[in-house]
Image (cartoon, rainbow, N blue to C red; front, side, top):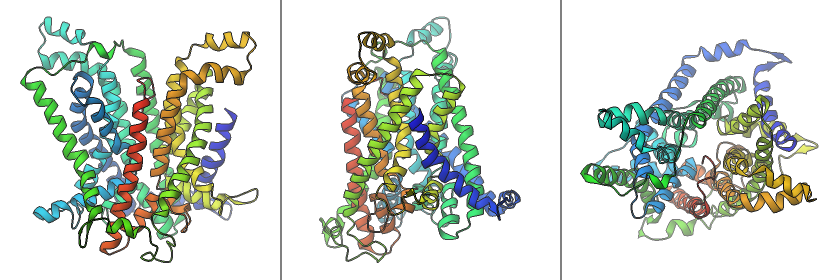
Length: 537
């Protein structure tokens, strides 16, 4: 546990604490009165209200649209189900910048809806809400359908035999059993949307702002560190509360249910109602998940002289870029792949050791360590990135010009996925196997290599795939620390979208398409090796 603790202390707690301290200290003294001034500012209260409101609305809308899909994947058998399950998961691993770009191409100025019917949603909050549903649909489907498929249907059938209606049996038997899973999914969606940055940054414009976007504006645009520090602390407190609630719901779900083999509950749809539900779910998936990605691809080929590779060819030249972006945009692809590979290696080492420690030990301290590992998913990535710049700038840790600065920041968001993927599999390994190997004289390293590794190899590959995908899409911290001559794909997309002109917009669509293909390829590859035990993600 020592190495993961040291890693988080040095590259997470220290930068975050430093940026908060710099913002709230004046002459070495804490100036906590500043917190009251910031929190009573009407503009900040408006941002806080919008952050909570859009997160609640996004969560409710996601549950409303995704829960029927969770039932379809849990209880129906139909051709192409495995492929469709992979397609549904693709948006979740896409960078938020790509999600924002896809919806901008669909509902923004000059988008498909604007061209066809003169309809634009980028000036309303609906574009943000729909993008959040697109991004989090898989969270609800995967979290709820896994449990729904293992609930014993005979309990609901028994209630109906005793006189309950179909709705009454579902409400009194199935819904209470699903409640903790639905609550856990809702909390995760609320957490992801509460800290939303890339989607709101692109689709929100000057009108809509979340806490995360406001922290970025106060830090990068206004250099107002005290306000940014107060907002960071506020977001930190909210994330801690959400993670505590999530941990409680997960423990409650694990403690109260008796489950059956999913193969016993799945069947082909029967009757008009079930076929209607299946086809309705397919239509929703096509309209909500497939169409935005298809439009993104279409726009990347729609050049000024018709369809072709004009924008893709332009990616190979730096001539169209400004002086702050001194390389050809296509170089961002190789930078992202190299950074992602290094971040994945770091995340596997740190996350693997953390998961092993959590497997062998228990108690409140370990549960607190488990919660600590999840914090990078919710704490402001902008704060972490800026904290890197002001803390890792002196020997022996002067990393400002180091190539490893970006992979270290990206690994922070990869570690939680590695831990959540590896932990259930490691806990399933029979401890007696390890003890038998040790009794026969095997060293701890050989016990791990001969006993644990063969059993967890597939989960390890799945964890590596997730860590690689989220590293490719990390934007909040990377936008601060990526050097102009070494941008990543999300940073390059954001910079292109921030510049006027058809060529810049087309290149942004082309880079987003490349990023989407790389992330989707990683996900589809890991889906082929995934097992049902491979963690919560």
